[in-house]
Image (cartoon, rainbow, N blue to C red):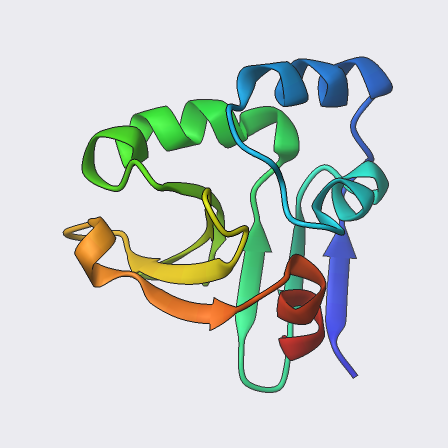
Length: 121
């Protein structure tokens, strides 16, 4: 059984602001998940995932210079260490990227859907 630490859900207005700021389609299940929690920590058998708060994702992507070094990706969390979890903007697939030396060439495909990613934790 996975241990899940959910945060307070974002306000409807905060979700609307987020959706207006992105320029790609989110994978199915993404917004449904973040309507329930504004960030979360999930400890699975093989993986630990820190989902960034939806309200901080745009800023954190700017701070990590994702658009500059891996413009086809949007990071939404990490493993608490050197691995970022990201949406591939064109496909909606979930990939892993290294925080150190973040680049598109270093992306590793993880899952085809966000729901599949959640189930894999």
